[in-house]
Image 1 (cartoon, helix red, strand yellow):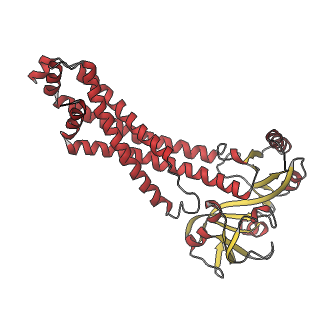
Image 2: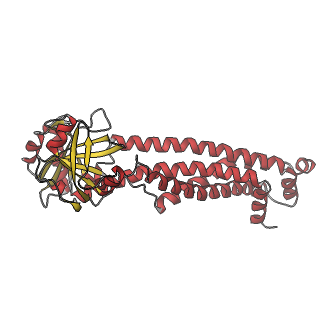
Length: 371
């Protein structure tokens, strides 16, 4: 019987116990895949949106909260006149419960600004002007809300006409409700206020020029933060919080998995004292005995990792269709995350097997054979 046969024979000795241990690891890994995949999907959705709209710099007020606080819309005019700014426009964005949908992204966009350019009409039309009491829905938002062109939509205290359905070329844009800035300001009670200034810099402005522009904006407007589009997610308090919650919850699930594997391997060592004694008597070194136990626990970790990735992928697919996620982000499960998850599972298996392996190597052949 070779080394691999001994490993799988040991795992198959108690198939139910081994299977439950693998399942415990799989649940922990599924939590890692689902939570990290959601956080990664959020990051990807925001980056795709900013790239689709063509925004170079985002100005907001993030003091003391996850969502940007509203500030005077007139700031947009001052920023637009600064050197290096090609175009600047104001946006009011809120996440609201709209009719039967628990959470929707609603945009009030400055009329005739470049943030309307990427919205391609697939049904109906765009609003005629900034005064029309009208909204256009991203195609995902229309599905979630069950609305079509010609329907009415209640947003806060006002009712709007749905005049068009649009393809925004990104998940966030397609999941949003869009209207002219003055109409949303009136509906939400934020007259004359916005919470984002979106900037396109002048053509040919070098990276150091963009950094200088961000510093100048923050110096002129204390309390506001100017961030290059590529850094928005990484510097977001909300994203950092989501990442921390994802990994802390995953870590707790993995600790439970470590304890489960350790318990299984310790029981296996105690049950197999006679077998280990025979192997020692046949000339197996203590290091090889330790390797045997570690390999068994690593194999359980690997199996748990593979099953966990599958469970995590299924969980993400289900979450993607829920009203709380659809239209906000597209969960991201790539090969990199899958490989990381399996490697984490193998590491969990190895760490869990260290103490049982050490205990097995301490057995003496005579005592083990007597057992």
